[in-house]
Length: 149
Image 1: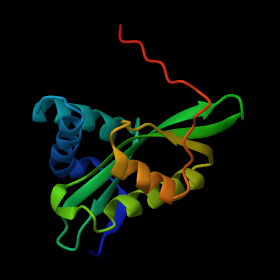
Image 2: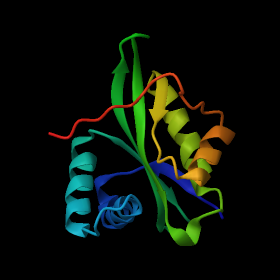
Image 3: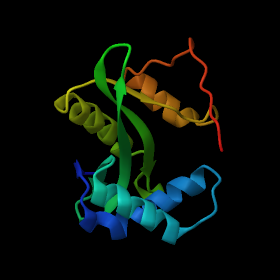
Image 4: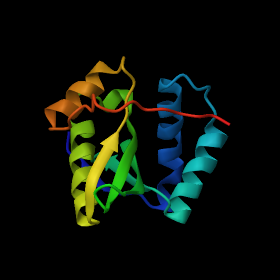
């Protein structure tokens, strides 16, 4: 499958919002296209995240990844959290996820990041294989905590 990977713009919202909604459903959230659209509209318009999209030969968006900028204070460098990665069912196992991951690393480097990190569900074995195959190392030294006020 021939793919173009590029940075999303607000004009991509009609295609990226349903992908984001499907991503949320993958993580057991109820379908809510209006919520997904509003959330992605804010990210794209504010530029508060970096959204990369995979575009097939027909111009359809078949996947996306979303990175949020942070700073790694221990290393004193810019960093990113790769929070979302989703490929439409019809486009899976054709290299889109790999292409998006490689593009995300390259774009983070271009922006001066010294670190990228991500989290995935323990049950998401296909994603873990992809990440490890691309050289990402699982962190077994730190626990991740969350607080939901």
